[in-house]
Amino acid sequence: MAFWARFGRDVSNRLPRLCSGIRQSSSSTPSSSMAPVPRRGRPAKRQVTSLDPRRLNVRDLLDLSGQQRSCIAFTTSSNTPPIEGPSRAPRNVLVSFQDYNSSFPPGTHGLFYFHRRPHAHVAAGELRFRTFSIDNISGQAELQERFDTGSDLADAVNPFLPWKLSLLSLATSSRPTVYNLLMKQNLITPSMDQKIQDLLAKFREGSKSQTFHHRLRSQVVERITDPFILDFNRVRHNYIFLHEEAILRCTWKYGFAPYSGKAWVRLEAARGVNGIPGTNVVMRLLRFAQSPNPTDEGLQREGELVKRMGPHGERVWTTYHASPFITPSSMKILEETYLNT
Image (cartoon, rainbow, N blue to C red; front, side, top):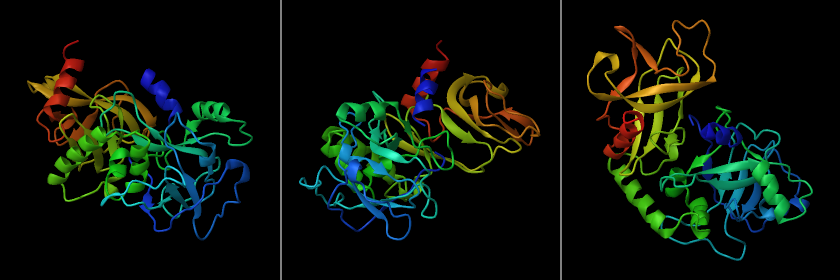
């Protein structure tokens, strides 16, 4: 229940675009003197100097409501130059809600911040936007209180998920400016950065891509026991799994017809599934995020194992423990969690 209580406030298959820009911002804009936000034409320029949720800056307050895109300079301050480096040259970024033809919804005012769970995987975390009223903030204490009681901007396609950019995308060369700020604020320490770069190097050995730019629509599963969204309507499912040994991509190139809806699911270990001896990995449907069509031929049910329709009828979805996206450390966690209780 703790997971659902937390996630209900911190509201993917499809994540927002954050594209490299070329213009440099030179000033920050206090909330009390914000200029009218242009809704058309050239993107509005803004500056963000902190992504630490415990070191908020009133000068970072933004109102993106109705904007199709906004030019953001993520930098420590106007007097402190960003970290230099061959893969981390200072650049502005253009931020959009879903794509450049869609606008941020009304009420998109608040702060960008870095979200990371305690004791998370070294490569876990994401850039989010916390929405709250930015009018008449009297001081730092009130700013912190409004931030803490606010809610995260919801994703354009899956409103039960937050608008976010994964740390994986920020750590690659196409996302240097935000990652620089995370390092400058010690949200990513030098030792963490080294581990992240080592894991990315392993990932690139088996991938044609050198960045995660075109994989932003993949859901990132930070822990093997974490719930994630399964869209029964899709025929292609993209996930990134964070393991102790490696970062692995998982693409299921099949659908779940005739089922529909979207659901929170999690991976579990089970024995004797579909009459097959041994230990395999299954998915349990925790709850529906988007209700299925009531006229579906057969229904997936909350609390039960996810099923697929095959040539021999309906069977429980399963994959072998040696599946390409399951590592020994994660399989051990699944077995200890679901078989040794």
